[in-house]
Every structure is written in C-alpha cells, then in structure tokens.
Amino acid sequence: MSPDTLAAPAQYAIEVKHSRFVANAAPVASLEDVVEVIRQASVADANHNCWAWRLGSEYRSSDDREPAGTAGRPILAAIDGQGLDRVVVVVSRWFGGIKLGAGGLVRAYGGAAAECLRLAPRLALVETARVRVHVGFEDVSTLHQLLPVFAATKLDEDFDATGACLALELPASALADLKTRLRDATRDRARFED
Image (tube, rainbow, N blue to C red):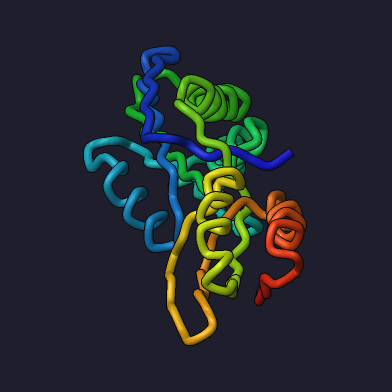
C-alpha cells in the first residue's frame, strides 16, 4: 500500500488543562519546503513550537525545550501512524499554568497532531515512471489515443525523419501494460527507452 500525503494544509486546536495546543500540518516536497513550513507555522508568542516531518526515508523531530521525547517523537508517531509521507506537523503550545507531566505532554502533542492529520484532506502518492517512446508516423495517433487510457502525461514530443519521440510520465504500475498494448497495436514497431 502506498502512503498518502496531505492534499492541503490543515489546522487543529485543543486545550488541555488550560494549555492551548495548535497543530499545523502541511504537505512538503523538499527539505526547503520543510524549513519554510516550520518557519511559517512557528508562533513567536508560543512557549514551544515542536515539530516533526517525514520525507520518504528521511525524518526529523524537535521537542523545542520540552522534556526529551515528549513532543517531537509523538508528533512523528502520529505522522507514521496515519500512513503519511511528505508531511510536516508543527504543534505550538501556550502554557496554561498547570504542568502536564511527561505522559500528559506525549498525549497532548501526539493527540493534537493525530487529530489534525485525521481531519486533513488526503492525496494518494502514486509512484511514477518516466519513459521515452519512439513510434513511426503511422503509429503516432495510436500512441496519443493510449495516453489517457494509462494516465500518461506527455512531457515532450520531438519529430525526426522516421516518426515521433515522446517523453511520458505515468503511474509505474501501468508501464508494463502500456508497453504490451503499444507493442500489440504497432506490430512491435514502438521503441522504449526507460
């Protein structure tokens, strides 16, 4: 099962023993996006801005001066527990005067992050493949007709003396079927370069 990401930024607020927790979650595509989201979501007057992010196999978290392991790790656990990738969550806390203890902090930070992510709109991450296909002039229209069938996007198209060369991006799971279908439709005249 491939992971999801968020379709749009989301926010969720909760109050625990007079402390206010506001979780902000956003989709990210790069480390630069992560840094920018953390910068924008961190609130200057909050006592703590704790965060976690996952981007493929890379991940980080911060407790921002809360006791070690009571904020960043629970936020990361919420991201992983929801099966999400390419996501950053920042939970800002305004201290309400009552200490929550380590267990209370873990529940509050993790709970705010989990509920924010649970309510957020999702977007399935689909692994894509890029391929170049060369077809003769007699097969160009056949190739163009197959693009929507396999959810293929044309990235580039060049012509030479023998036909057309198209650069395509499509779901990786559809690539083998496209090759088979195009091979059959063109009597094996199509040439692929992965």
